[in-house]
Length: 212
Image (cartoon, rainbow, N blue to C red; front, side):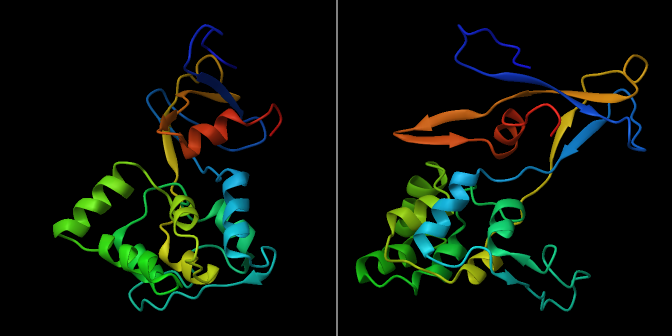
């Protein structure tokens, strides 16, 4: 439920998770880990921009010999599922990702600017810090702004960081509610210029309905 009144421009949600059919137990002071999913409209935007078959099944094989995981995320899966559940499409894009996708830009000016912003020092790094990092431009923003850049979606899934679990302090006591666990979360929503920035996990939690 919403804890703020209609007069507030912020949102804070009280959320209860049913533990009745699980073996989960908790103590006061514990944290609850939540695996979020990306907003569907952002996934659909990437599908639109790169024009691929989103429901095609595929698998990625980890070639790092020191890794104990054969796949970077559960495989086989579909491109739509991977973009929605397994990779972070909201975080500011890292310089090495800009460098890797630059070669797929057909416009030379766009390609050179992507390469420039992949630098780790100098004018290019300053532009990266201002344009990408401080402005929180995600892969969706980059592919929108650099519209001739069309990297293969499987390469993009290799490059993007994994979508991480978020932890929230438990706001209930097992002495009073042992069949459920409660958290309280401030929904992250703000604007940079005309661009809306939403927190991945709090937006996911905000959109949950009773029974989900």
